[in-house]
Image (tube, rainbow, N blue to C red; front, side, top):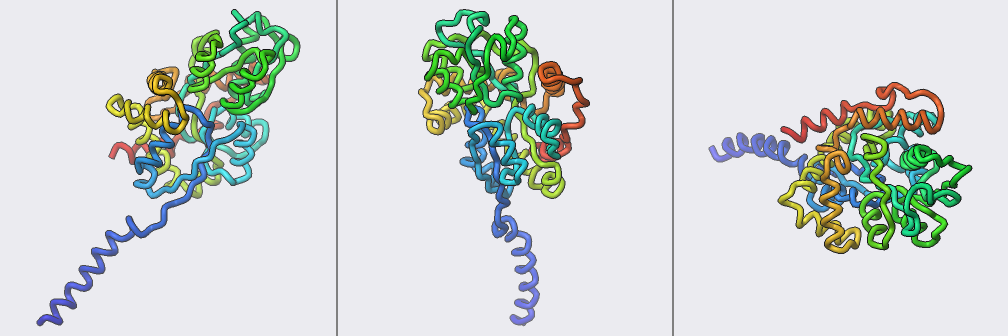
Length: 329
């Protein structure tokens, strides 16, 4: 009788463990994610430290890039799986480098402002000097060229471009040499520039209209081969973004910025507030802004030559849509 009872229980025990073990025993999927070191890195820190990635079965190695050029090289070469950056970089990879890249989510409007040295009162004061940029032919450099053209200044004739790289490098270049008249800066570097007495000539979204700045993009073949992983990654990012912008988490989120970026408390608080501002900071749930993206394509066509392309050439939001189904379960 005892033997019969045990023989009946064994299959049940095995079945129970077969249902429960995979969630604990499976190794997490390793992802290499590359982005710029800004205040908008907050959701990555949150997703890693508070378990959002782990709960989705992911182990994310976060890498901060020196420049968009290095970032694009890493993605094209396969050492990076997912990039978060100004999506104009993806457009350049597709149109110029002929790489098979696809944008899979939105993210933010950039939090960009045009800062200049304290000795410069308006755009006319830039004449004869340099503008510090990341790369000379993508994203915020194109914004700078357009804004300066609106004020009668031509690249190569009235000013030069100094490709210094990411936000910390652009800010350092402004501090090091007054001939570097200005730069488009985002958080927290715009606040750091202001703290040193530099002057904002305005937000780029106020001067140019809505702009799809930060977003996620990947190799198209990688997305096809790793669809479920990409969807879980995007779901975890959105969950971490929601936590980051939830007002009840403000104190903890600001403390993360203080710790990770070594910011003073007031600067961390202000960065967090500005990043939550619609149309300037993060989009709700990192949604893709089609109107802003059409402006990206129009700006690239105007500044670099040619006609704006069909936006659908560059995007596949089906991964994001399935990720949102996971988030909202």
